[in-house]
Length: 438
Length: 133
Ligand code: SF4
Image 1: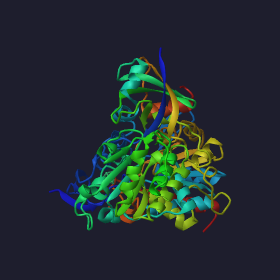
Image 2 (image 1 turned 180 degrees about the vertical axis):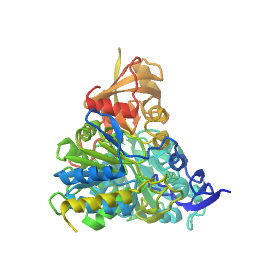
Image 3 (image 1 turned 120 degrees about the vertical axis):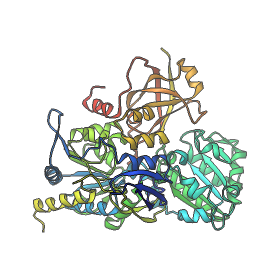
Image 4 (image 1 turned 30 degrees about the vertical axis):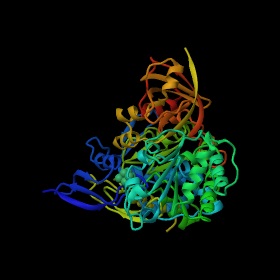
């Protein structure tokens, strides 16, 4: 007899769907089926059961050969590496729970490390903009129940957040949005005709990288001031049309993604998107929200925020917290050769950092705590496999709208497998011994 | 051999997400991300068949990927490589004091490289780190 576990939270993207049902075998060891999740979420649960899964830590020797080591050795190597480094980079934290994050930060404080999360290559520029100008935002519940004008700017939820539109933003019928998508207008801004754009009422196929101009033009159009014939490849009439559509709504929400955060202009694109949102509030209600990628990257920002006052790239090497994007951010530190050890947990810089940064990681003492084989584990000196958080371990995670949700454990990890938090706890103990602190 | 210039952007696709979760060492990940999506008009300019291997080169590096017909077009002049190690061989690492590399909007040259292999993700990163490619 199999049993069904309900209200399971998906640990993949920032939508953090909390309505999954997972069928597990009677002994609670095997996942048989996953219901309600999108294909990516389903794969995340099912792949945790892979037969070829790594369960023993592996260390690379001088010649590049991999050998199995004990968990004790892995703890020892990690603690020694962090204590011996002048300025270790402790990167990742977005695919784990808040409990593990805060444990990792304790270690970082003791060893004088830099703690950075995946926002650094994702919504870091958003965080800079929010700190510069503030942000009028809301929750996804409010979007579902109230929003009738939805803008997706430089994001493609059909691919990156597959259930976002059906659970919150376009299709659901909410308290004041009883007609669902029939009463909502959807605007997409993207240089490609994406699968999201194909569903839109209005698609502005913007010239790549000209977001600042178009956002600026929309502010002009909303005030009814004159515009040139085209801006960023979009005809004046279309811009005016979009401005009118937004003004005539009861509640506008602008969702934005990597199209704005990673193109040139970076944080300035978001500054002006926030300014547009503020302008719209002169006519109707409007809010703006980043489409966060990893399921708990928002939580990492939150925990860093409570503990050190800053949401990413916190440099503790001087004994107090410093935050200076461009200086204390992972890629800048790596490229300038300013860190002398790298600890990675809950992310994959090997796959997602520019190759020039990955080359630097490959030259340094390095540890990767990760259940999968990844390009990061391929170049790190020690690969420590752990349990899947959100599948084999519960804990707190923050959804993209900053709502904390308790994730659920659905199956037991393989025998003897540590969770992120347990591994960090053991490293912390050893670091305290080495440093001589009680 | 003709060579064309395109504006490269990278980003997520659903295949990228699924194959990544299924294991980055598996062939499905290479199939999903070791590609460049090009517009029909750009295939014509390059004078190449679809599904041929091409070499993509920017100021910052070079990589061999398979050129496929864009799934989310048309967007002449714009090329798309799903986020991952292949894209990261050529995107701009410059952060302009924000911490954020420039993953979108990188000028690249594309030329046919039918006989050159597309490496899998682990091999690609290892070779690049050892200076072999
Ligand atoms: S939309 Fe995101 S959170 Fe929801 S099931 Fe898919 S991957 Fe998981």
